[in-house]
Amino acid sequence: DTAVSQTPKYLVTQMGNDKSIKCEQNLGHDTMYWYKQDSKKFLKIMFSYNNKELIINETVPNRFSPKSPDKAHLNLHINSLELGDSAVYFCASSQGAGTVPMNTEAFFGQGTRLTVV
Amino acid sequence: GENVEQHPSTLSVQEGDSAVIKCTYSDSASNYFPWYKQELGKRPQLIIDIRSNVGEKKDQRIAVTLNKTAKHFSLHITETQPEDSAVYFCAAIPTDSWGKFQFGAGTQVVVTP
Image (cartoon, rainbow over all chains, first blue to last red; front, side, top):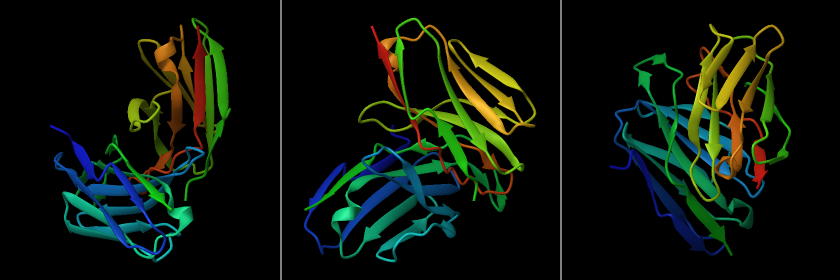
C-alpha cells in the first residue's frame, strides 16, 4: 500500500484556471506538508499542518490555499494559475505527537507535475 | 527559519571513487540532520539521518558526520556506483521546528562508469 499518495500525477492547465491536488497518507502521521520543486530541483516548503492545524505558511501567494479535512488528508487548491506555478508539487508527512513536535523521517508522495500553459 | 547551505551543487565522480557533500547550518538549536536522495523523476527518500548526540553514523557505503561546534555535517558515499547518481538534499531541523523540513539547495551527483 502506498504510504503517501497524491493525485493527479500530471496536470496540464491553462493560465487563469483553478485546480486542486489531493494528498492522503495512511501512516497515521500527525504532520503533513506541501513542497514546491522548481526546474532547478530546489525543494521549497510551502505549508505544514499538524493535526489539521496550519503550523507553517511560508511566503506563498494567497492564490494557494491548503485544506486539511482530517489529519490524513492535506489538499492544495490553486486559484488563477500563472506560468510561474509550473513545477512539481510534493506532499509529505511525518510523525508527530499531539502538540509535541517529533523530528523524524518525512515520507513523500510521488509528486504532481503541474504545467501551466 | 533555519538556513542550510549545501555544497557543491554538482558533483561528478568516477565509479568506485568517494563522494562528499557538505552542509552548514546557522541555528544552534538544530538537533536532527537527515539526508534525502531523489532519483530522476522519483520522490525524495531518506537515506540516512543523524541526531546531535552522536558525531558519526554509518550504513554500508554511506556515512554522515556531524560537527556541532562548527555547525556543519557531511554525507560520505564510498565506492560509488551508477545507481548513486541522484540529487541529494540535506536538512537541519531545530528542536521546536514542528518538523519544518526546509532542505538545502541539493547536490546533483553523477557517477560515471
